Length: 237
Image 1 (cartoon, rainbow, N blue to C red):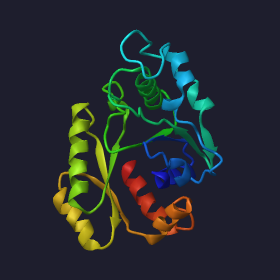
Image 2: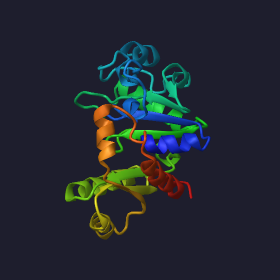
Image 3: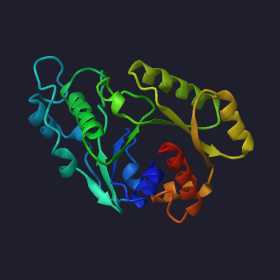
């Protein structure tokens, strides 16, 4: 995702990257310094209580289902090299899919970003579509599933497609990752014949080393950026 954001920004696009993964490492992948970190929106208890008029963690009772969120992208983002970053976070508790103040806050903000904002919005999620509700699904231009050669990855991709179909999201693209040889590419194509592939990223020890060093995967790696440019080209056709 970081590479895609970099390519789009270099093409002059206004890019807003949203980290909605529990691992929350997108800031590092985009090259933000360690002392520049954002508190996830889902963890801002005072803000959530102010906007929803209910305490985070509470279930039942009354609270706003449409809290104000239009001012948050300007207040809670970082910017670097033409890319703005917002950390959404997830509801880290049992029953996180229920109607609770923090979940309503996150979903409302995602809806606003996808439906109202004018820039390119890239949402980095965990393996699922829980962040997308029926009201926002049609606003997503493409759901990109990253797969690796292996049975477990194939099963996850199939599950994601079923979940996406449940909320009316049918426009899916696939990126093959960590491709070591042509046989890996053929494995994915033969086992996923009805999935539209946007491209393939080779296994690259430099990307592993970049992760270990806490630097962007595209830094000093022009080959990676070229591969990502091809994926972006297929994405926006």
